Length: 467
Image 1 (tube, rainbow, N blue to C red):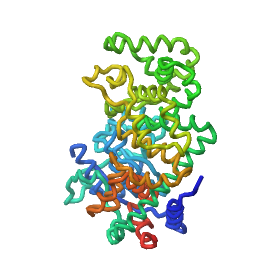
Image 2 (image 1 turned 90 degrees about the horizontal axis):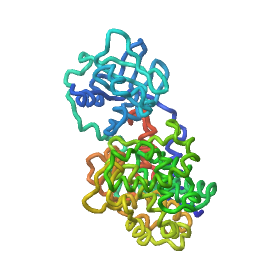
Image 3 (image 1 turned 30 degrees about the vertical axis):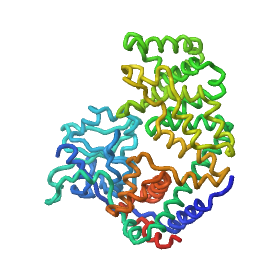
Image 4 (image 1 turned 90 degrees about the vertical axis):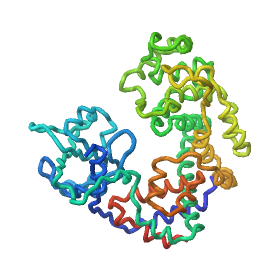
């Protein structure tokens, strides 16, 4: 593979920033009178940063992390020090200590990284907070007396906080900022490329492409279940089967067929399920080991938009496999690559059932819905096509730079807030896909690695050395 020079420049800069830097850990800020207001106050540091836990330990908040707007613990990416030991993980805040079990957090693996449980009320008899791995979580009781006198909830703090790096970035000319972001984007692309090409070396090119596309169909919530499914059902096995048999394997091994009752669905869905079961029963015994509860993919279905439901994404994967020769040909040989043709192939995919259904239980849609839309194609370009092809044909980097950013996400918004704050140029550096990729890489390399609440991050001072 041809090395990418900007990626190498960013890698050297990134390594230089942290060379010789000792790890520092200082208190930060964070908290929640409706529950949301209490979270806002905590996050603003209104309750303070040093506490005594229920069992008498000194607890200091080193980094208040990020206010989580999605499912899971209230604050993620936090750092706390309990006596003399530092812990990295998440923080959960509840009005009552018993809410931990009332909300079933103790049985939910998404809460296994929680290192601190905050609450305002608790039963007289000691209540212990434990994760699904039976690890005891440090507890702190918050009281109104802890609040600073002028404390006021500010829910806008949820987005992120302005970083110290915003000052030197504001003083740089746009071309210099662009060079930093572009170099970080190329470095990120090279990291993805190395991972993908390792899979190519281990599994073969088409198998690696199939697994990467399946992962992309999982969106952020269900990437791992899709990877697991693609590993259990290799491409060679699926391509040997007719379309309905392929889909039967996908929906059967995923566990979705096992929980569906014909009486619960619409007539059109009932007919589709009969087609799947007519194939699934023939191979089900061979797959029994995967149908045990602990072996099934752990699908995340809460807060999922209908169009992103994994059942619909499995339907899209079936359609993609049906058109596999057209899908894989431009990726199999870099000299045959045509972005426009590949994009058109994916956008044109259809399915007799899934083009009008979101899930197996949903009513038919009034009009056809794209199986793979523009934003998902863009994700596949960013995470599969260009990481695979650019190192083999570096002139494609210029093509990659022109890809527009069709969609932002919470991480990108946080990165922009941290790096640019109210600087209007922040928007200018989010218009292209490579802008977003570069910002994410910088945010992950520096902001997420820093646990001093920005106070001792080396990145701002070293920015002036960028050339």
